[in-house]
Image (tube, rainbow, N blue to C red; front, side):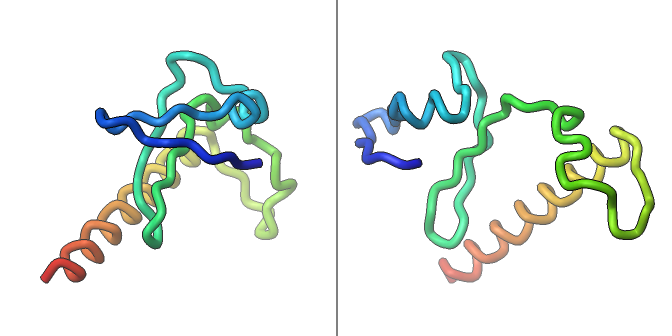
Length: 94
């Protein structure tokens, strides 16, 4: 999966049809956009956390979490990643 696209003068990108089809992206899909290791990363917000339940099988610890506990853990991880990204960016620009 992948294709070449060009950014417009307004900073807009067109996601190629084969990528949209593969990821089931439709008009109005929201994205979380960030950078990672010099790359732009856009993650579509078209899945609910509950949709991923059981995708990795049973946890090695045997402990199960509620959807709310999973949401909280994901948000904590996103917040920590954002803090790390900002910190790295600030260090790089000093």
